[in-house]
Length: 385
Image 1 (cartoon, one colour):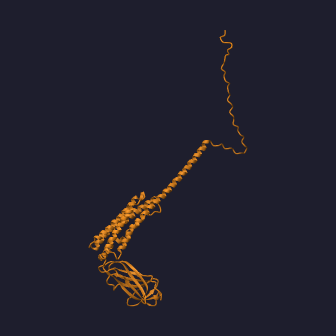
Image 2: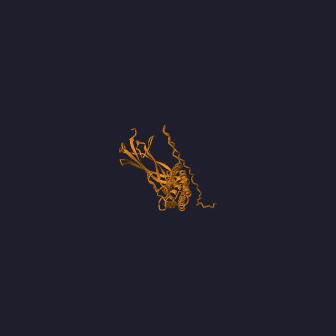
Image 3: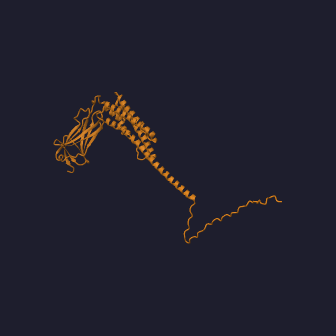
């Protein structure tokens, strides 16, 4: 006997039908056209990105290089302007400082100079140097010129000290002999010469070398020389000046023996030389090279400065030509000759007796004027007849 109901259907798990993999479509090969170019395969996606990246890198490099050149150009211009601005500020200080030396030379050669006026001038010039020093303290030099700028200050300080020393030495002179006082004055003046050396060798030269090393072009370190002629501050020059100053009293009155003496007057035309005579007429050949030479001596005991010598030509008492030459300095007992050329005589001077009058103008303190002038009768004739 069966234990299963007849009506009960036995169910079995049915397996699904097996699916076959579909066939992969095959790529059709297009027939190559006879004689036609072969079509290039497109680049892979990664190559395009790499090319774009390379292009961007090249552009960035170009931009960076351009910026470097631009910044360098701007920096170079800024450096040039910085050095130019500094030297432009130094220049007026250098010029004002050196001007005191020119004024000193002028005063030492003045016929009106006294001890009082020279002392006052020296103190004034010293104050000017101190003001220049204060102005230099405000300078803002470029970094590489800091050391050189210190020498600008040292120069101005030396000049202020030297001029003050000259003033003090002169004030304490008293009755010292001229030679001793001259040595003391020259000793103080050595500071002025030293200041010129400091400026030239410790400021101007290093500054120029620094700018050349840095490629700064067109900028010049200014010069500054307070002693253009060292002979002016030598003991011998100071002795002459001091002797001349000692010959004047405080009120300006000149004492001692002063004066000049006219020695001779010559007419020189090429190789022809004729000495004029006050007592007889002299025939003078006139040509382009005609020169009158006047010789005189310092007959006093002191140096004389700025001595005018005057030459006048007159016809029938009427002046037709006049000229004055100045001798800057002549020592006691020294003889000097003054030349007068370019006479430009008028036609009225020819064919008539003319007079050449020569005068060495009176110097301060001169009393005897009988031997410093003369009148010479002459007859002017054109060269060659």
